Length: 115
Image (tube, rainbow, N blue to C red; front, top):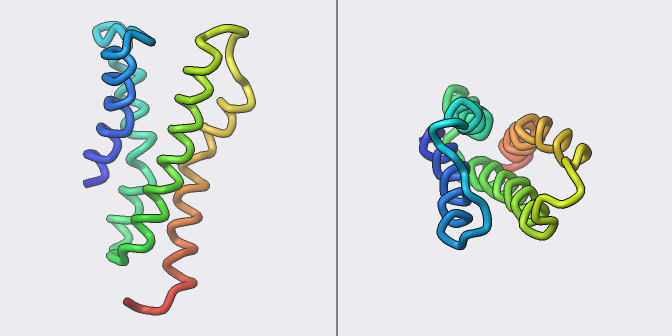
Protein backbone atom coordinates (compact mmCIF):
# COMPACT_ATOMS: atom_id res chain seq x y z
CA UNK A 1 0.00 0.00 0.00
CA UNK A 2 2.83 2.39 0.85
CA UNK A 3 4.44 1.83 -2.54
CA UNK A 4 1.13 2.50 -4.32
CA UNK A 5 0.72 5.77 -2.40
CA UNK A 6 4.24 6.80 -3.42
CA UNK A 7 3.71 5.93 -7.08
CA UNK A 8 0.37 7.74 -7.28
CA UNK A 9 1.70 10.81 -5.46
CA UNK A 10 4.69 11.17 -7.78
CA UNK A 11 3.32 10.08 -11.15
CA UNK A 12 -0.24 11.46 -11.19
CA UNK A 13 0.86 15.14 -11.04
CA UNK A 14 3.52 14.47 -13.67
CA UNK A 15 0.91 12.87 -15.92
CA UNK A 16 -1.52 15.74 -15.40
CA UNK A 17 1.20 18.29 -16.11
CA UNK A 18 2.12 16.47 -19.32
CA UNK A 19 -1.53 16.23 -20.42
CA UNK A 20 -2.10 19.92 -19.74
CA UNK A 21 1.13 20.79 -21.53
CA UNK A 22 2.58 22.57 -18.51
CA UNK A 23 5.71 20.48 -17.99
CA UNK A 24 7.28 17.70 -19.99
CA UNK A 25 9.23 15.10 -18.04
CA UNK A 26 11.70 12.83 -19.81
CA UNK A 27 11.05 9.57 -17.97
CA UNK A 28 14.02 7.87 -19.65
CA UNK A 29 16.39 10.49 -18.24
CA UNK A 30 14.84 11.14 -14.83
CA UNK A 31 13.89 7.63 -13.76
CA UNK A 32 16.37 7.57 -10.87
CA UNK A 33 15.05 10.82 -9.41
CA UNK A 34 11.46 9.64 -9.79
CA UNK A 35 12.30 6.31 -8.14
CA UNK A 36 13.88 8.19 -5.23
CA UNK A 37 10.78 10.38 -4.91
CA UNK A 38 8.51 7.32 -4.81
CA UNK A 39 10.56 5.90 -1.94
CA UNK A 40 10.69 9.32 -0.29
CA UNK A 41 6.89 9.61 -0.32
CA UNK A 42 6.34 5.98 0.66
CA UNK A 43 8.71 6.08 3.67
CA UNK A 44 6.22 7.37 6.29
CA UNK A 45 3.55 4.94 5.12
CA UNK A 46 6.06 2.09 5.19
CA UNK A 47 6.94 2.95 8.78
CA UNK A 48 3.25 3.00 9.69
CA UNK A 49 2.76 -0.41 8.11
CA UNK A 50 5.88 -1.94 9.68
CA UNK A 51 4.87 -0.59 13.08
CA UNK A 52 1.52 -2.32 12.78
CA UNK A 53 -0.55 0.85 12.94
CA UNK A 54 -4.00 -0.05 11.73
CA UNK A 55 -5.94 2.97 12.93
CA UNK A 56 -7.48 4.81 10.03
CA UNK A 57 -6.86 8.21 11.62
CA UNK A 58 -3.05 7.84 11.45
CA UNK A 59 -3.23 6.89 7.77
CA UNK A 60 -5.57 9.80 7.01
CA UNK A 61 -3.33 12.25 8.83
CA UNK A 62 -0.29 10.99 6.92
CA UNK A 63 -2.17 11.12 3.61
CA UNK A 64 -3.54 14.60 4.26
CA UNK A 65 -0.18 16.08 5.21
CA UNK A 66 1.51 14.37 2.26
CA UNK A 67 -1.15 15.78 -0.04
CA UNK A 68 -0.60 19.23 1.45
CA UNK A 69 3.17 19.18 0.92
CA UNK A 70 2.98 17.86 -2.64
CA UNK A 71 0.17 20.21 -3.65
CA UNK A 72 2.23 23.08 -2.23
CA UNK A 73 5.22 21.99 -4.31
CA UNK A 74 3.21 21.66 -7.51
CA UNK A 75 1.24 24.87 -7.00
CA UNK A 76 4.44 26.87 -6.52
CA UNK A 77 5.95 25.21 -9.60
CA UNK A 78 2.85 25.95 -11.69
CA UNK A 79 2.51 29.55 -10.53
CA UNK A 80 6.17 30.38 -11.04
CA UNK A 81 6.46 28.43 -14.27
CA UNK A 82 10.16 27.80 -13.67
CA UNK A 83 10.99 31.49 -13.48
CA UNK A 84 13.38 32.73 -10.83
CA UNK A 85 15.34 29.55 -10.22
CA UNK A 86 14.98 27.00 -7.46
CA UNK A 87 12.95 27.72 -4.34
CA UNK A 88 15.48 26.73 -1.69
CA UNK A 89 13.13 27.14 1.25
CA UNK A 90 10.52 24.90 -0.31
CA UNK A 91 13.24 22.38 -1.17
CA UNK A 92 14.34 22.22 2.47
CA UNK A 93 10.71 21.89 3.57
CA UNK A 94 10.20 18.99 1.15
CA UNK A 95 13.36 17.31 2.48
CA UNK A 96 11.98 17.20 6.02
CA UNK A 97 8.38 16.54 4.98
CA UNK A 98 8.58 12.73 5.52
CA UNK A 99 9.74 13.38 9.08
CA UNK A 100 6.82 15.75 9.67
CA UNK A 101 4.35 13.31 8.12
CA UNK A 102 5.67 10.41 10.22
CA UNK A 103 5.69 12.41 13.45
CA UNK A 104 2.14 13.68 12.90
CA UNK A 105 0.83 10.22 12.04
CA UNK A 106 2.35 8.61 15.12
CA UNK A 107 1.21 11.52 17.29
CA UNK A 108 -2.35 11.00 16.10
CA UNK A 109 -2.12 7.35 17.16
CA UNK A 110 -0.96 8.18 20.67
CA UNK A 111 -3.49 10.95 21.27
CA UNK A 112 -6.62 9.14 20.16
CA UNK A 113 -8.57 6.53 22.08
CA UNK A 114 -8.82 3.05 20.52
CA UNK A 115 -11.24 2.77 17.63
